[in-house]
Image (cartoon, rainbow, N blue to C red; front, top):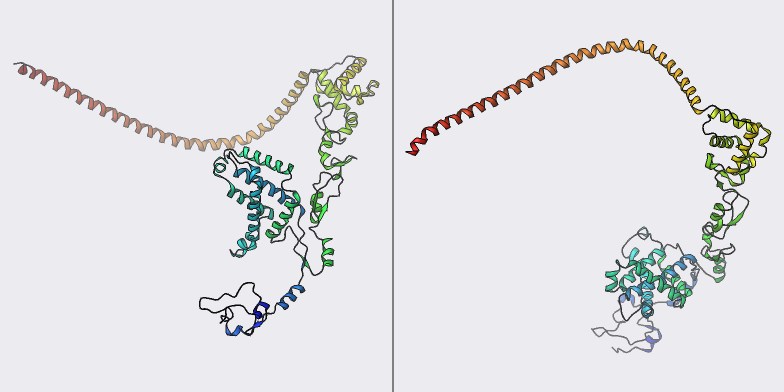
Amino acid sequence: MDTTTTDAETKGEKVGGVQVKPEKTDNVQNKQGKSEDELLPDHLEDVQLKPEKIEERKEEGPSFACDLCDAEIVHQIAQELLSGLATACVDNTTGGLFKNPAAVAVDIRKEMLEYILQRSESFVAEFVILEGGQEGEVLDHPFGIISAFLDDFDSMKRNWFSRVSGWLLSEMREDRVDDFVQEMELNSFWVLDRREAIGQTILKNVDFKNICHCSQKFSSEEELAEHRTQCGFRSVICENEGCSATFSAALTEKHDSTCPFKVLPCEQKCSEYLLRQEMDRHCITVCPMKLVNCPFYSIGCQPPVVQCMISEHCSENLHSHLLYILQFIHKEASVKCLKQRAAQIEQSSFSSGLGDVKVVRFFTVAVKDIEQKLGPFDYKQKDADSKEETKAEDTTKENNKDNVDTKGEVTKKEDSEEEDTKTEGTKGDVTKKDTKEEDTQKEDMNKEDIKEHTREEVRKKEDNMEEELKALTPMILN
């Protein structure tokens, strides 16, 4: 059989009852010398492939995809791509004498894009289909997945010196990465628009749950255009004056709740409207509704007061402020006398305008002037009041004692009976203790007798030994 392709085969006509697609290369024979047409089974010889119908089916389905992405996530991915490139360049050239991060940035960027695109395209197949896992096994956010890809690429590009010194010079490494990121941004090495376009592609490959991009498709451009005006992932610019943030329409409320340029009423319910970023400073410094200390805080008035209500507070609490000042002036006077003196000052005609004074020093001077006009202040000392209080306490204690005595007589009888029973029990305990003591004494006596007996025996043996030695000594000398 001729191995060269026929005109019918090159044109895609029917050969042997089978519609053959046109081939660019020559028809290759197998080892047995048979062509691909001769190797087809008998039941497939009469089958005709009709690509025309397949194309028609493709045209019938939706072919216009929305593909809008979360603008904020895309921007974060773009920033992460730049920092990932800087990290890989720094780690690859750490300790090198003839290389710097800028010299390898172009090559490493190319390698990084190829690596991340390949990982993102095979991400769903690796973690869901091939491993037979469920969707619940891949719970990470798309941004976290892409960050993990960048970390893996950085670990691949680290040289030996960076691996050894990474844990020792971590702070220096982070500074070098930040400096190189700024250098690339200043030199426009990798423009933000291009990074965001790459970030959209990677995001669509990884976001199989459609969390951060729209996957809807439509059959006409009109339907697609109408959908994009209402899509939740369409980019929106913040309406607050001064804010240029862009985000998805679905996140409008979230951004509005944290936007620093949002105009809000004062949190402390004053009449001012101000930006959220200026709220804290306003509430702490100039807000008329902020809580402050009373002007007489140093002499005893402790409760906080609203700043705009200080004058009302001073006029309403004139009596207590007078009492604090009088305690400071007349330190030995009793509290009762000071209260009477404070009431006397309030009732006098000289106290007009005293409530308007908000400085402690001026207030004390005014009170002293009023006291000079009223005359000398006769007061009892604190000791007299304390004595009267102690007498009153003593009388109450005596009354309580009388009541206790009457109750005590009733309880004494019960206590005596209980004591009788206790004494009987204690007698038995005493006898037991006596017997135990006698036994211990007997044991001690026996021990001492044994010791003395042993001592006497030892002495006797020593005496006998001395006598024998005396008798033997003359025999030895002879």
